[in-house]
Image 1 (spheres, helix red, strand yellow):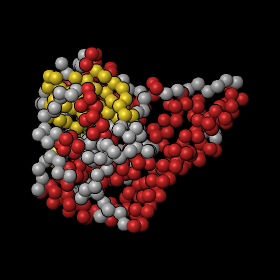
Image 2 (tube, rainbow, N blue to C red):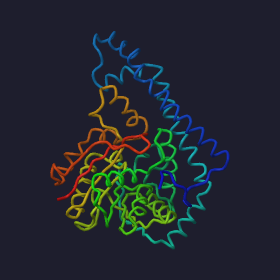
Image 3 (cartoon, one colour):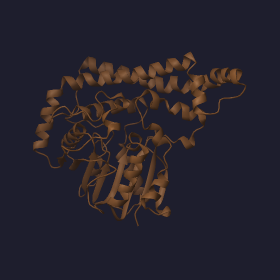
Image 4 (cartoon, rainbow, N blue to C red):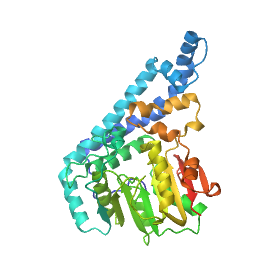
Length: 371
């Protein structure tokens, strides 16, 4: 299944809405490929000399680089454009979704009523404040918005916004993130065929369904904290003919029994969590795995250890301006140590990058196998 498949739970934009989305996509692509790439030149040619003139030395830290860059009109223009493009993206995504809200709720009801998978929500579950109180990525209402027993808007926004965001960032659509990891598994563990799979931090379920479709004999479970996200993920899976069991749980503290799964995976979830929760998810992975089971946590290639001071400053834009409170917590984490702390032996751990087939992105992958 390629990235961004069509299905019944997607809102269908009319002519004007589609034109607006295409404009936003073009704007975000231009900013990413033409404007943002010039920020280092602005630093070298303008901000750095100005800082040296004032202080008698070059800026050393990301904070010092920031103090110089935020004085430059070129950088201020980039930042304003980038922020406004993100807000425009959500406006463009929201219009067809809210216009079709009743149809989406009715489709959820119909698909849920004839489900082959399942949805288990916990009325007593308390969404962590760091998710509940912040509209991450500027998503309207945030991931935890839940307005009724049929509400699927958070999931619809997540998928619609995510599709535009990734395309605007130049990420190709030949493979879903799950398919990338399936290829990684096949290359590194050619004899491994999971029979019970857990997708942690599944959001709108776009990475859960490919596991059910690739391993139709496996029992696939997925967890996240938002009820409306999970309703959407559940209906989306049913619309695509994928049997997935969705649960409202914290990835760092699930209620599954020990040794419940032979494969545990997460996709782009770490950068949505504080480091404490990331570490808890790694420990939970070890607890939940059977002997010989494999854990893989994949995310965006944002590793501060691989960047110089300017690269760390520039990558931190989303932390300060795009409501990504855990961006730096992920960029500075140590998956190797988290796997070790969870109980995995050093020789069973691998971390590194793995390219998508179309070479548009090399995802960061952390992998470990339980003895």
